Picture (cartoon, rainbow, N blue to C red):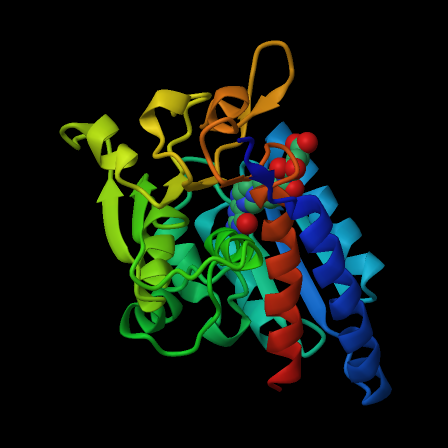
Length: 281
Ligand SMILES: Nc1nc(=O)c2c([nH]1)NC[C@@H]1CN(c3ccc(C(=O)N[C@@H](CCC(=O)O)C(=O)O)cc3)C=[N+]21
């Protein structure tokens, strides 16, 4: 039986329409939610992402500003900009596009963002709150994955979830979110032994490895929910996930496509976090 497609594209569109209405309500009370995106340097992929974030903000009626700064900017200049945005009452959310050029200290930059404006959910105060189960800004990509799982209508509690990848922005936070929903969670990584066996046990599989088509059909438990976080650009210019989609969809019960899966949800969750930041002032 063929898997049902979980369309992040459609679901994110629905969320964006809801956000648009809520933005209008806030505006009636004199508040315009504002997002500042800081883009350092000329990375072509980052430029594309930042442009789509701005478009999404404008479409829902939010204020959006992109601060494009030179590749050669100093740590102090960048931190001065963040300080300014922290104090700017038009700005409710701040996102510093990652990765930063190598001479800049990413950790220090994230620490300088006011936790109340950290709509990326990367500040240690916010990741710490996630760890202890307090309400916080949740990182957009894992939050979007959770929303996609919810859309299947399948109960998470008691299920075996396997997360492949242990990054601070996807693997670790999604493992915590699944745990908070009472899944039994395994985190796999490059040193995991018997990776195929671990993956095969998953009722819910999160692929966040960063290697094109790494997970193939025979590794997947029949009936599993497969969430593919990978966005890999192939030499032919096509985007592909970490899961070999054509094979996997014959085995899974639900599967996300790439593109049109997790990616658009990341942007929708960024809007949601920015709206929440504006609502809580
Ligand atoms: N501080 C920070 N926060 C981020 O949230 C952040 C970041 N840095 N750095 C880079 C990654 C990547 N990211 C994506 C967002 C949307 C799509 C997306 O919409 N993708 C479309 C396809 C886009 C295309 O065609 O290239 C899709 O999957 O359907 C992808 C990737 C956010 N990131």
